[in-house]
Structure formats: structure tokens, C-alpha cells
Image (tube, rainbow, N blue to C red; front, top):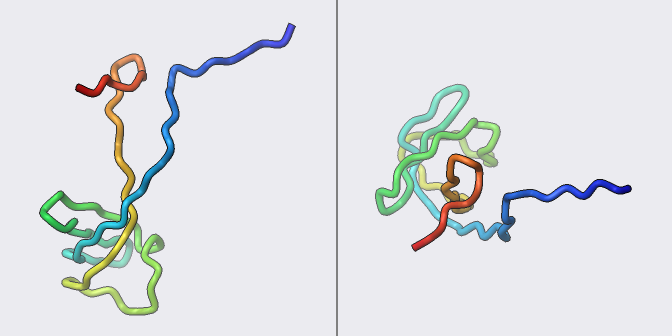
Length: 81
């Protein structure tokens, strides 16, 4: 008899949105970006930055950002209000 696997995780289509920010810190291995509208910061490895321009503090950047989903302790998606 063939075994059927079920997953408790409900998959959603990824819907990235284009957002922007500015570089607030850069070093040999990473860059830290301040996201527009003071939404927070994101630090990424330099290999994720595709440019021929030398990186400097103050430069504007664009990137795609996907939403995160909160999970319950058992791994299921939390219900939205």
C-alpha cells in the first residue's frame, strides 16, 4: 500500500514587493540597509548585492521583500483576525 504524506503547512503564493532603503553600514562581508518609512533594517551578505558600483554609506538601494507568517508552537499558521 502506498503511503500518503500530509503536511500541516498551508502553502501560499509568494508575493514579493519592491521596496527601497539606504545603506547605513557596509564592511568587507555585509551591508546593513535602513528600509524606507523606518520599517526597520536588514543586513545582507555582500554577495547578495549585485552592482558594479563600490558600496558606500548613504547609497539608495531597491530590493524585493516577502511577508513573514507567524507560526504557532505546533508549526501551524496562526489565524489572522
